[in-house]
Image (cartoon, rainbow, N blue to C red; front, side, top):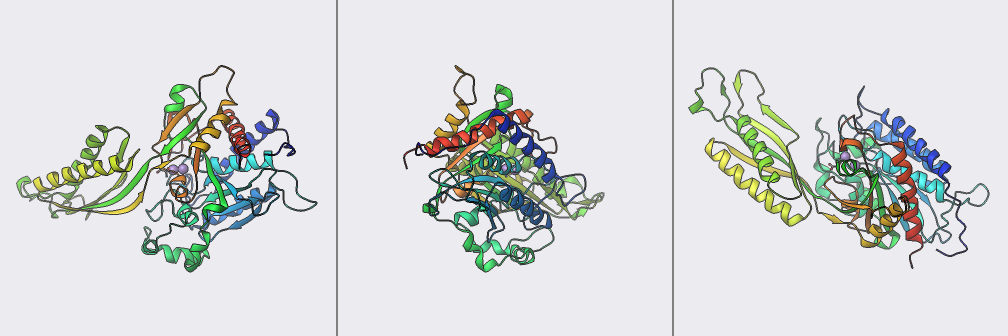
Amino acid sequence: MSARTRLPEITPDRVAASARRVMTRCDELARVSAAQGRIERVYLSPEHARVNRLAAEWMREVGMVTRQDAAGNQIGRLSASDPDAPALMLGSHLDTVLDAGRYDGMLGVLMALEVVRLLRAPGPEGRPSVSPLPFSIEVVAFSDEEGTRFGKALLGSSAVAGTWDEDWWRLTDADGITLRQAFLEFGLDPGRVGEAARRSDELVGYLEAHIEQGPELDRRGESLAVVSSIASARRFQLTVEGEARHAGGTPYDMRHDALLGASEAALAVERICRAEHHIIGTVGQLEAFPGAMNVVPGEAHFSLDLRGEFDAHRDRTWQAISRDLDGIMGRRGLRWRAHEVHNAPAVMCAPLLREVVREGIAGTLAPGAPEPTTLFSPAGHDGMALGAVTDVGMLFLRNPDGISHHPDEAVSSGDVALGIRALADSVLHLAAEPA
Ligand code: HGY
Ligand code: MN
Ligand code: MN
């Protein structure tokens, strides 16, 4: 960054005001939900449209030029003096899981907007603000990181990464609405989704602040961490087929109970994954059919969310689970099959972005404090998709007890202030790097 660039002073008061604004706006976003009394905001829903409008308003408030892209992501841009300069992309996602917390995703979008507020330079009279840095800055509110509605996660960021798969149009939600129909109902043109894709030469990188969603920082008593890599993820929908029978008249030695087979499978997932390092398997959904109290379940459906620090290790674990399921179902006279609905490779955070985030965090620590912590992320993030088109970096914030994907998800305003300061300094360190 040239010495002539005069940056507005980032005072503690300005940072504290930004942190308060982030906390208030997380509460405001939490009120945009499909369900009374809990947070539920899924891809291409009326709630998605409402938070995109809110985000666009807040982007314009910090002088950004806004647009909603062809996949429903809300984007704000602060152009550098050279309008063709590549952009550093900041942001996170605004969609949620069911009965969600109010910081997973939302925090990163709002912190990015505060960094823009702190760093921007006023544009010519009445014109949008400009980026005083050698690169433009974009803030992206991704539209579907969780995959709650259609099962396949990272749809919004996959479109930006140019990795959209035409097979996804047939994905359906719980009401049987296809992704294609949902696009059309939202006012998007499925035939133009490719226009959301960005080229590598347009981007400097993608930098995301996010709550840790785990207990490490809380246990260590630290506020912030550098992220080393983001876990690879595979998600499956599994079906177990047995035989529905009378719950009273059917002796045990004649039963082929699909629910018991699925239940034994869920315990096998836990046993096999716990024996491994950094492999996490979760059965989050389990349903018996026909689902009557007096009928032995003839069929069961369950989900498997499998993650690992490295793709090959994760895949070997999936093979071990599959072998175990063959044994379980064989013993019980059941049949099983798996349909994979999501597969995202592990993404290593780029060394330069890890370094600027480390420097950004170090600047918030007392002199002589130990080096900032570096953590692997077992939680998935949009950076898993963006890694296909640009460098990825992440900054974690402590969330007490690590509880997430739950209404009790929390973060402190003080940690948010430290996070905003660290993120802004990370951007400035990046700007000071040779082109
Ligand atoms: O599932 C995850 O890890 C992320 O929160 N979507
Ligand atoms: Mn999440
Ligand atoms: Mn998230």
